[in-house]
Image (cartoon, rainbow, N blue to C red):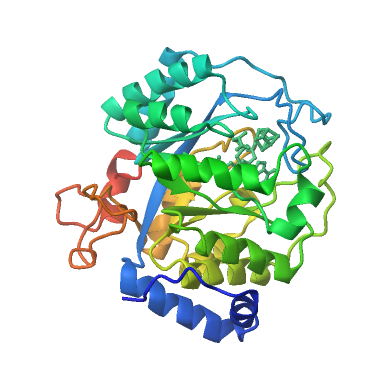
Length: 358
Ligand code: SAM
Ligand code: DTB
Ligand code: SF4
């Protein structure tokens, strides 16, 4: 097993980025296959439980109240609506349900309401994830007690580029929230966005910072900027698709045991580009026709892509006490991992009822 390192230097990370494309992908493949079934992809569904009107100034975000993006701000969704959406996500084959809120940080009364949602979603048999902004230690513990499995809080970019993108909070604030989440015993989902005009060295800096965290995040979402008219980053030069694939491959090499999620931006990617990302070591996606406020590929399209690639949805494996609890047991990974009990590859059986079976 490739050992986890927390002492990556920028030069070492850049040297990986600089490898010939085929060599980089080959190395990423070897590491990926050491730890995972390379044909299993985990599927999460997102729901925006509190949309828009956010006081923060994140230059990429359509939900900031500071930018004229045409998005209507909404109140926190009711429990019944959230549960309906979670049931639909489960029926379509998602194994994890992630609730996102456009807050700088939640009020304690908001945390109580979200805690209720978490308990109810978990009772449906889904893994739970939330992304609510900055959390105090007490808030993180309250969510953990309610049954929250994952907390998503992204570093977004390299420390030295961060101030160009967000001015209303510091990089250290993000690191502090991640510490509260870890200390509360939850798994971290933490990644960033590329295609914001950063340099390769800054992409390397994001991945270096993620890998060198005291515990590598269990899930690492790699978002490609979704350019939304009205946000300051709309009109940014598009990132070379091969550079995006390189970013995924380097994430896989630096964080061999983490789930690397091909996140925002898939709707604008070709099937071939997504396939290259899976080859580079991505093994998780957001599934469902909407991310938080922007589009995602149609469910039918994703199902067809899974079949065309011979990819099957990854089962929720038994939770263990390790940080990287969602690692597939490599002894059983070669067989069906979706737990449908049919003995068939999950991608075949899953489409019988028109869903990706989990
Ligand atoms: N408000 C909370 C926060 O910022 O932590 C939670 C929600 S926020 C929308 C979650 C993440 O979505 C951000 O950290 C960012 O990485 C990602 N995101 C937001 N807008 C995006 C965009 N236009 N393109 C790609 N990723 C985006
Ligand atoms: C993450 O890293 N990406 C997701 C999730 N975590 C919450 C959000 C992507 C948002 C894309 C823009 C939108 O739909 O509003
Ligand atoms: Fe608010 Fe989160 Fe969007 Fe930043 S990324 S503006 S904190 S919703």
